[in-house]
Length: 152
Ligand code: SF4
Ligand code: SF4
Image (cartoon, rainbow, N blue to C red):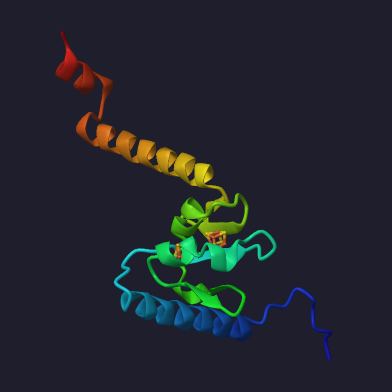
């Protein structure tokens, strides 16, 4: 009997993993729809450093989270990962740098990480600049079109 090659791929195994992931995505979408959120980052991660968090004295992130993904559990801030849309609102309001760490994946596969308010502001500025440029390109597809509009 021929030996099984180590490069053999378990297609059925992969298909079932895909199916599970798809099912999980669907459930998450439904869960988030109930909170009124329509657009969100599908993939990402979030963590809170319990050593630096001010916890009970602060709880700002819990107040600001738009999906109630954060909650107060005995002695610390808890996270319901399925409810997190990786928006960064919690990082933006946290008074301790690097306490909340968020990573999110865009549809094109690029990833963004932030753990300080200034990183979010910088990132948002970059995103807005990209959107502005796209809008300009729609209105003025060529340099000539731009010059024509603004010629003295
Ligand atoms: S990233 Fe957004 S959705 Fe996730 S916990 Fe922070 S505020 Fe809530
Ligand atoms: S905002 Fe930051 S310091 Fe305050 S409770 Fe949330 S994680 Fe802790």
